[in-house]
Length: 180
Image (cartoon, rainbow, N blue to C red; front, side):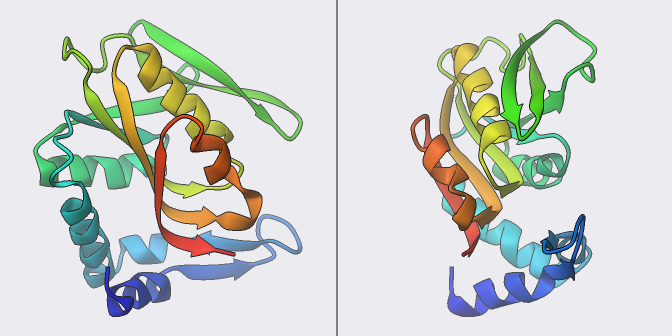
């Protein structure tokens, strides 16, 4: 990715100070999504990066990972698989719990999400990685099905929270924009 392309993407992400609470600077990707040029630059970069991975599926994490994942799956000619919060998928699922600051949450995947593709190569994608809990659980689910999570991709990484380090124990990790 060129420095100019990275600038286009960065400039399209809006900062919202003190959201959802004082002291937090929220990175709003809705402005990236509705900027057709910036979104195209991002998706072209991701398609170029993953075109030679010979992926079978792209799995997106609920909900913003669906946006990037479905678009990229169409560009690469692969299937798209949603990884959802507990209770949102209509068929038989497997699930994985992960820790939150106070308590637990859970993500699910259909047991037949990767059809009968033996050792399916899967790219996991989401908009942001922070502490890595959700992404780690999602990668674990992919691997539990017999598929292989070949890499996890994020548009933004909050590097200071070190979620990528947690996830790297399980799969390779790539982020387009790092926030220190």
